Image (cartoon, rainbow, N blue to C red; front, top):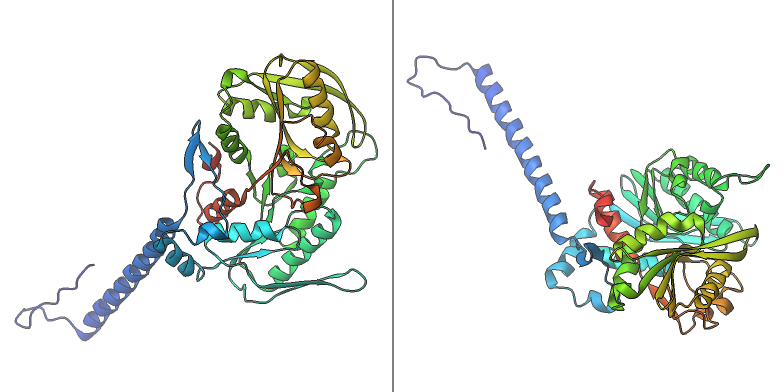
Length: 401
């Protein structure tokens, strides 16, 4: 703190009243600036002090433990106190109707309460959205995957964004754990639409300032947006779980179910002690139809881990698993971020081809779709940490390095 030294009365140069007044105003301004700076530093250090950090587990990759309501009460008292204080921040999270359980887990991790919002449908199917608390000047995150019914959930998200914009929110981030139209990212035949670009335009025009999405079908989809996109990779969650299986690295082979997923499988294999890679060559004759043709690589006597971004009808992974067993694979695991599970996916996945089917909760899994080999991992902590880093203007990519 700087100080103002006034000359003594005996000094030969007595300051004028205007000079003294100017000096006092400078002192007041200096004190005010220092006070604001200390308040700002105190707020920033407080936020950083209470933030949950990911632990190191597998090859330097973050471990993402599952946080639920039971474990929340076991947090240290200082964390619980901080969670209460955090509710006074300008960050607010609201959930759509597509996956409220994931939204609640994200809020638990962040020590926040979900914002109050009223979403209802009229008799003719029209969607009504009203925020039941002020969002003026707030950093708002809207959690809504475009899972089935895709068009209903997409329209609901657009209306949520519009309502938020008209309520004078400072920043609006659409948190889309599953971006449903990402598969329509280019023209493979004449007279086709590029629906991924259309949806990107809709989100931008509705008023979104940023999009946060998990494991897009292809990275080029990020280029369709004219606003920032944070691409969250869910590999750390699956990798940490596979590490708990204690599979010998010499027995492991990572398999791409098609040629288009080779880059994804190669990155996955590199993080699994640089495991060898195999590729299933297939020919697709129509949407949701696939035929396996050949296997590139050696899987005989090995534990095969098939990696894909989504499982829709499970035709690709099921035929791939059958081929792997024919080629002598000892066990076959299927790992996927998005479990769309369109019929007849459950019948194919539970037919005995897989030792285990590992998915995440980016989409809600209905109780009727559970089967003994299914394992569902939570990405709530990963998304919660990403949201805090975006809010604090910190690096997001460092989570996945």
